[in-house]
Image 1: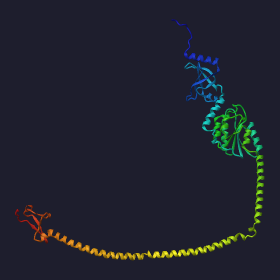
Image 2: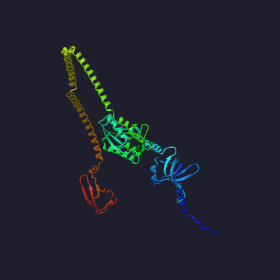
Image 3: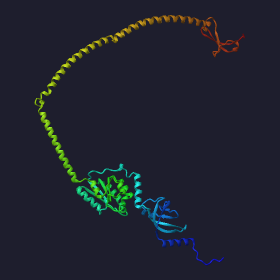
Image 4: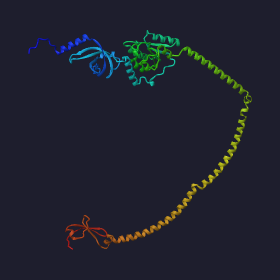
Length: 447
């Protein structure tokens, strides 16, 4: 079969052609759908599928564009995205490169606000236990706001009107636009390092949610929470609420209100002090008048006119006690003497010398009895010993030797009882009743 001479695309060329057509024809588009299969690898880029009930399209949100998305994207969210339709040439998949995204039916900023509020609330940054008290009459007040805005003018005017000699330390910072949150956090940090301010007002005038967004950034919230100096948040108007309001130690509806809250009115204080002074003077005068009346009344009493009356009764009482003491002392001495005589007699009866003498007599009598008993026992034992010696002597070998017998022994002291035990020439010794003989066997006869 002969094929016509046609121009054929390579797969790569075809995918590139489709990509160029899509880039040229569609450009930037808006797409609504549900996020699914969300993946964010180490690179930081987010890959997901945007789908509805009948179809789906691959999508990618590169790391650099994430700063434009002010909320955390999650599976299952309904979103409205803007991006370019293009083709991923290696696989031939067409996809949308997202450059902007917001929740469907819910503003992106509002979504980010709620997400950050929930996160910081769980961490405890809004807890009342961490709120620091605002000093009653601070001498130095720190202010973090733009140096040229209406907020700083309102604050200074109110402070000057209420307490003209208070010192204000201004830490200027952008309050809107890129980098504003970082400048606000840095200004709070600088005032803490400076250490002179006793309280800090952080705020700005009113505006849209976008205008106030710097005060909804996490870096500002953490700077407020980490401040050792109490902070009053004064952002926007009374109806505006920011993350800074929840984190601060006190929220003021406006910058002017913050200035009124941070320091009392000097004129009111002076009026209060004057009123207290008048009350104090009146109380002191009343007290002095009462004391004067008491003193006058006391002067009229008898003991002031006749002081001796004060100690007449005491003198009589002293005399009575002296007599009572004398009488009691004599009775006491008599009782003690009687007890002493009784103890003396008892001691005499219990005297050691008497008891020793009695023991000596008992010991003497006992020694006479023991001596007599000992002599009797000795006499009896001596008789028994003499009888035993007589019996022992009768049985003794020495008694037998005394009757002319002898004991024949070898030089090794072995007793010879049979002539067969020795040989001619053997040396023997004979034990006599008195003495011992050393002999030699000249001959023997068997018995």
